[in-house]
Image (tube, rainbow, N blue to C red; front, side):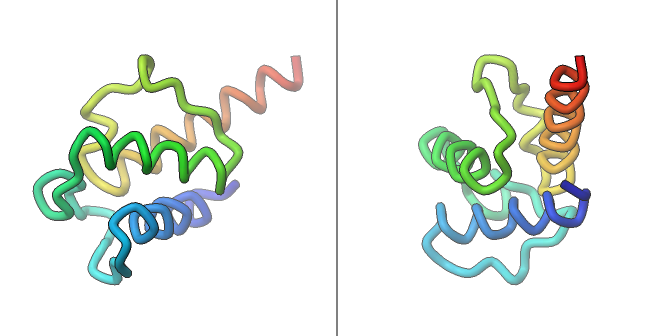
Length: 90
């Protein structure tokens, strides 16, 4: 997936989890401070992102800094996808 596809997937997943459209969500949107995510919505977000991107996320492996903004979450997912691709290539 490209970076832009991942950012779009994050925005779509946020809309699904928050049960509203989030057109105001940009790369710099802070997930906790501005969108008011909590621990339950974070888990829902991760599940939605796994479904939409195919990138598996281990909640034990993720750092809260990865959830600072839309861009930091996209960067984390991008790195996970790259690691998965490298592992598949062997």
